[in-house]
Amino acid sequence: MNAREPAFVSQSRSARLRQMLVSNELEFMMEAHNGLSARIVREAGFKAIWGSGLAISAQFGVRDNNEASWTQVVDTLEFMADASDLPILLDGDTGYGNFNNVRRLVRKLEQRGIAGVCIEDKQFPKTNSFINGEAQPLADMDEFCGKIKAGKDSQTDENFSIVARVEALIAGWGMDEALRRAEAYRRAGADAILIHSKLSRPDEILEFAREWAGRGPLVIVPTKYYSTPTEVFREAGISTVIWANHLIRAATSAMQAVAKEIHTSETLVNVEDSIAAVNEIFRLQDADEYSEAEDRYLSSGRAAGSAVVLAASRGKGLEAVTEDRPKVMLPIAGKPLLRWLVDAFKKQGVNDITVVGGYRADAIDTAGIRLVVNEQHAQTGELASLACALDKLTGDTVISYGDLLFRSYILRDLVESEAEFSVVVDSSLTDTENASVRDFAWCSAADDRGLFGTKVVLRHVASSEEQSSAFAAQAPHGRWMGLLNVRGAGRERLQAVMHELQARDDFASLDMPALLNALIAAGESIEVQYVHGHWRGVNDLDDFRRAGDFAHAQAPFATAVGVDGNAAHGGAQ
Ligand code: SPV
Ligand code: MG
Image (cartoon, rainbow, N blue to C red; front, side, top):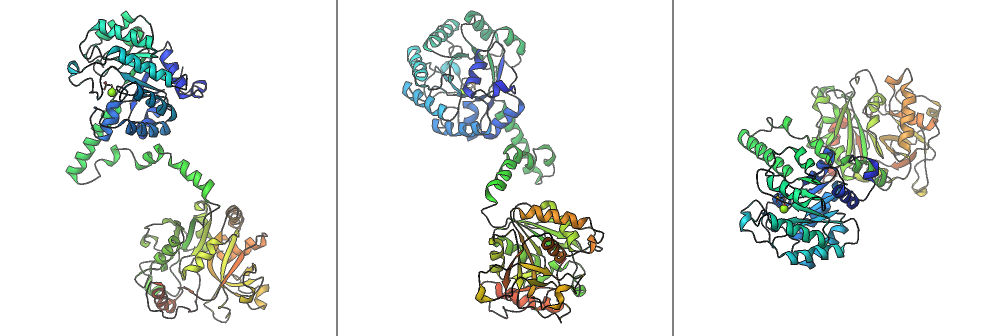
């Protein structure tokens, strides 16, 4: 039966292992020694895993002499069982003690979803069969039968399998002793016999199989007689072949070669293409599932998780200082404007930051951000830049101009807003006479501290395209600062409105206020959070000069200079 056949996979792991042992087909198990290798065994198509004592010891860097404690082995198996849904047959060495240790082992293995255990008739602490096997003392046969009985009596899952491993051939006690022991173990309740050999030819295994004559399932480990054609095992009526140590050996060769190469050449360039990509490691760890779960379980309860920063413009009025960089890379008090913004986002737990660059995007410091480029930046406006990041919007998102400096409470309050759409409006700026000022905002109510806590919504924002509108007759209530928070279901509605705007002929000239007004026209409620100063935009050389003082005042222990300054903001596409 194929490993992926649904009827097989839907059975418990122990039932699947038992079925493999008793089936008339020749079955195969592959060694694994940790979670990653267990996943790899499953992906290769194997139906079961051999939890090799040698390989598990080796990956810990210790010897196959019970140097790793049995609980350390069981902990490793837990990772393997979690990483792979395959049945695992543990190589349980001698059972880590007497009958009582075997009973406890079986109970613990069942609790961790392990399908069976193989115990060998040697003495604790054991030595690997391929190291001076003749010198290894065998267990007393009757005492070993007691261990098998104790294990079978203590299992609660009827399908849990106990495989008895006969070491008589390894220890040089001869065929008759091997057969005598195998029969005794079968009678004691063993579900299968593992007959082990260290010869490079399969002769004694085949002789054993002939004499055994199908009294019960036979398991073999052809590590030493590896050149025997598999068909020979099939014809001999073997139940299961264990490929016992080949993944730890493959990993060892690969690690040795790569470590040596990197050490010698002092560069990664020679190895990169011949080793697994980092993304392949993420895939094996099931990293995508984590991201999906994060969306499902984290988004509603947390602050906005992502931000889009519009940073495509050179900056009108700043030509003298933006020859080789965009406005957002201008240094303010020792660090670029964009870095102040990114740090402010990170401080609020907004770590997924997409910056839309345009003019001299190559000069943008991309540390900690994702850069996308509006290639049409010279001919298009803010919304065309936002469109470049539209598919990057996941979860709650803050859309921001790139040229903002602000006190941290402003962003904190914005991302904590429960509203699907919220904006910050500065009520200290209502001077419509100032030509460099834009983004005037009209709201459902003026900023009134006496009404603190009353919900205010945005009615209109003057876009650069239409300074005069029906609203222009009334004094504005303030200025939109350039921050829009989009939460929950608001994101998809914003994307829908953006798609409608993208269909318009004048889309290339549209700016952020046009989006806000379109959202309002579509019936969305955009909550207003009023502030009174406490921020700056950088729109001309004067702003640039004053921004340094403002930024200095935000730094810890800085001397406060003019921190309540008014902003003169022209927007940053
Ligand atoms: C193991 O894989 O640890 C085994 C098989 O016990 S062998 O090393 O071949 O003895
Ligand atoms: Mg072993």
